[in-house]
Figure 1 (tube, protein in one colour):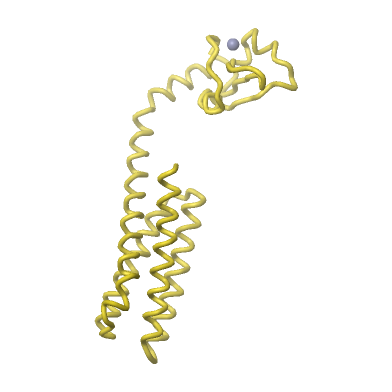
Figure 2: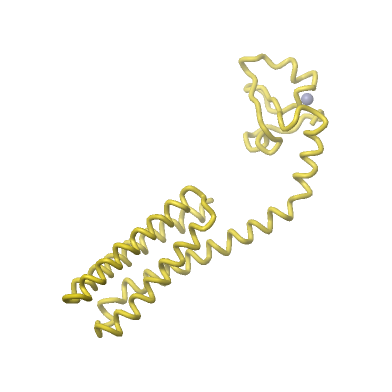
Length: 186
Ligand SMILES: [Zn+2]
């Protein structure tokens, strides 16, 4: 979680440098190429914003899209240097930022893959949990706001929890995340 926030911050900073670099590059061009570079910069910004929105909303392809934009930026810079002969000094901060952005994005795509694998690995645990919940009210656990353990609704202790103190969870994991331990009825 922390790493994700940090890499998102790094990526935002990288994009700022990239787009400042691209706008600078556009202004050092003239005529058609100035116009073209301006349109391309705007387009890349839109894709970058879409990618960032996807990452914020945890839509799967967000990081991949961000990696794609950074790759496009690098391609654009390469082509730009071919057509315009712009010196490397004009482009280099943006190029470095785009490389950083590409690295961070690809790293996050990689992390997501790993996480997906991990999920498969913990299937045993979730199967266990679903077995437990099947023999009681499906997927529901109850705890007292003033207590430290969670119960299945059928437990005698669960029935003693006052309505105003009752806290419901959809899963045992949910209950654990909120700091409750399993009662031996679960
Ligand atoms: Zn209990």
